[in-house]
Image (cartoon, rainbow, N blue to C red; front, side):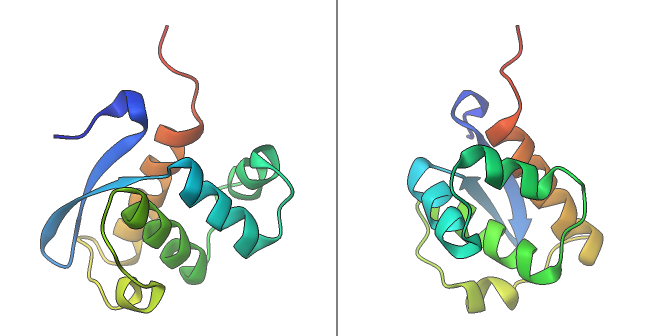
Length: 105
């Protein structure tokens, strides 16, 4: 069971229910990948709602690794998601929201 307070989500990928979490290490990995200087710059990168297929692969892969699964970006690129491209975008959106949205009051 996922812990939303820790920023975890559950998503179906490749026919499996998997836990994703953008841990501090996963966020640092994304900062390094995109050349962003800090977490705010990383959050601003995705807040516009536009995401490429490569962005989706990178964010989902980092989230899976943060959730404890050893997986490469290439392996993530080969996974299917319900809803196809829209399904991938929905996973990324939920993961970023769980990571960057302020906690409920």
